[in-house]
Length: 80
Image (cartoon, rainbow, N blue to C red):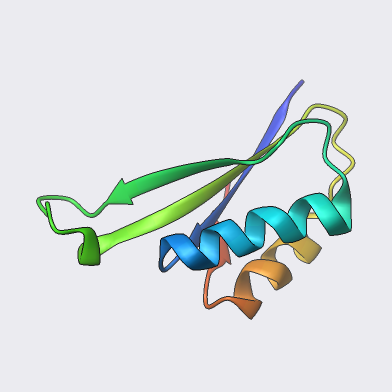
């Protein structure tokens, strides 16, 4: 069973940095995906969160460590 971790970040710069850190610290099997998540009813880029989606087919990544990394950038790990 594949596990997908979704880290929510406040802006694109933070998301890009977190994606790089995920690769450096955890060495996932696949590159993390960046996704812009506009808040409901908002079209302005200022009102968007960015998601870093990390596939974890081997269930080897520590969710607590991912949450801690996201928190360093004012983000969080979305609950599954």
